[in-house]
Length: 110
Image (cartoon, rainbow, N blue to C red; front, side, top):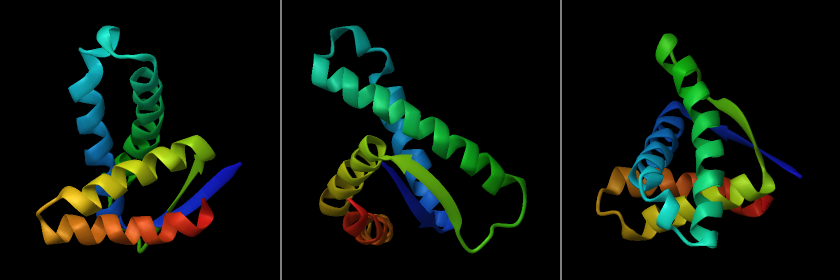
């Protein structure tokens, strides 16, 4: 099952930054992670690759109003998990607002 999202340029940049940071943080620890964490890491890498290609398009020219991106169900669930944790734990109101908006768009589709 595929889930399609329409994201604004700041939302796309935020998600790309969030997933890149998670992948970089856990890349060296991969051999010692448990099975569930390894699965989450590999899903996050797939999502980071998709987002990276969209962010490259974003960086090339003037940003459009929204960008369509399609996730598989497990990838969308991973995005929801990351967004939910940022929405609840981040102190920056702008980041919390971006995370809340992504969550509100994604939640009914899951």
